[in-house]
Image (cartoon, rainbow, N blue to C red; front, side, top):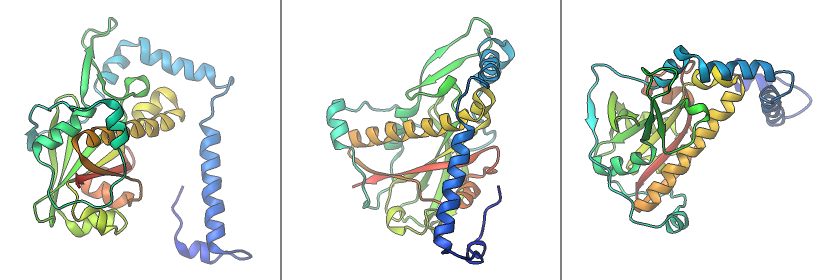
Length: 280
């Protein structure tokens, strides 16, 4: 579906452009939701697809390799993460949205502590394919397919230059994928909300390689991908609260600009949401 410019709505007659826009957005959501509903009619097709992912050795091996790899890119090996010394109840009570940060970027140690809340926690070798190593993380993912990828944007100490990294939950490493992003581009990508980015410690972007989930669950896999992204935000929010950091889960961002500096194509992999974190 092609995006519509403001001129499209201004040419409409009989009602305001704003009302037409809202009605069209409602229609888009209704069409999407209708086409992701489960039914008795489609159940055999879904069962066949799920059976393939559960019992086909080749598919099991393919699913076990559901992660991005960057070759010949600089890597940061994060230090060993420190545990959060706080009860779950107290962490939950401390979690809140923060819209003002001081200007200190997060250190490698702080990023390690934070991203550890998303890392791989256990492994499994399936009986049907001993060459496959299935990994499981701290958050739920439908079918263990992990369609959501995790990126970190880090500022320098002046917040004028930023670098983009890809986070690997399996190795707990960061791989640098873009070494020169201007502050103006970061501010623009967050819909010009300078106050949220100019002093934060880092920004985490979540993207979706949706085919990983769609191949098994059909259109329902899109819902599962968004649910997974929500689970990741919750993990990050709780971990940040336990570390005494301020956070803001932020959905208001320009997809095209973010995909550009993350160097993803917006088709096979697309932007989902973002998470701003920093010292209070």
